[in-house]
Length: 207
Image (cartoon, rainbow, N blue to C red):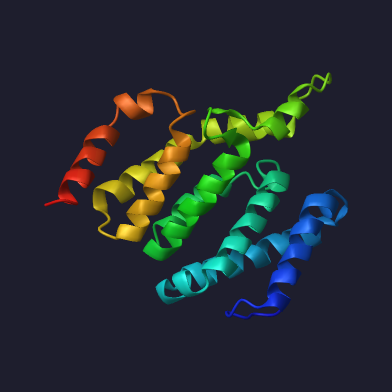
């Protein structure tokens, strides 16, 4: 493995190939290779996004790694990675810059499962729902997992909104919440402190 923190054409094409392998060949790879790729990508994301000085400088590089991780999640979660949500929420509490990038990952994952403009499963995934077989499709499984484990994500967002003074992190959290608003249960909006917290954050920005 090559560790380079200045995103180059060589890296870009390497990551493009890796992303294509994940999309088209993942299911035929040996499990040890799948686990190795997963750990490698996660390790790179954590190492790069935990350093605030790298987050902006290596924005394109981290963005590509995030997209690759989402492709892995579409193959692995929840069957081979049942602890993903608790893992990413737990890691987010260790570093604000890491938390900021994890919010981006959660937003991307939500966009893969739902069409944020309508709150519906995306058209690509909707095609799978027309399958006549009786077992759950990957789209349905991702949908259910996202809904069932959303409470952990919401608690993290609430924690950031109430405690962080880091503007980029708050902005990333708001963008992530925006993607969630069309499909989360209304109780998360009207029966929690979300609205009052948002009002407070907005008002303090102009004081």
